[in-house]
Image (cartoon, rainbow, N blue to C red; front, side, top):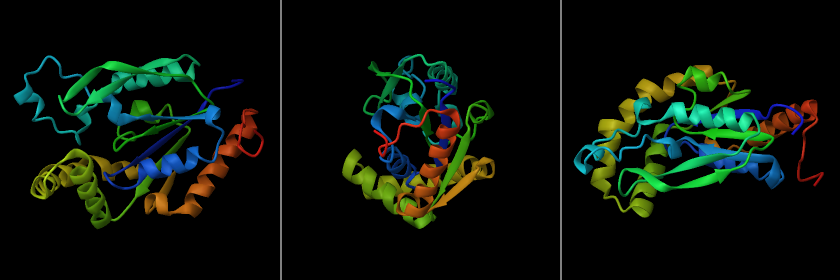
Length: 217
């Protein structure tokens, strides 16, 4: 790399489609030029707590995340050094012993519900994106994911959404929209907005002399 990587934050509520947006952007670039760092991998280590305490974790609250480690790792990637990204095991509600080696790239996308909540993270971003999707669509997506992928019951998902997810969204996630440079309605279905995002990234990379796109690879 000849210059500082382009750092993009992609935030939005649970089920908003932020992961779909991120993956759609990644598909528009050569594999070696862009990477995604998921905030979900940076939940705090809870190995020192008994299981009954771990089960009480509110994963939608800012305090659930180890932003200190995420910021440290992001600075390492910006400095063109590799990191060992942690892996979170939801079955035991703490970090796994495994890590994932991540190499620095020209574009770094930080994706997660609260990546715009911490000013220290925002200060490291060149572009800040908020994926804005209606609440009814988000709860349906959350239901489908938690029931089909995590073996949850309908009642438990609804109870968690009403008592935890929704109030945390209103208190912490929704207010971060004001920090965004770009708002993408309807997530991964908004192909026009995703194309515009990809074009903006290409423009920034060309200015830095770093563009490695599929059309040139």
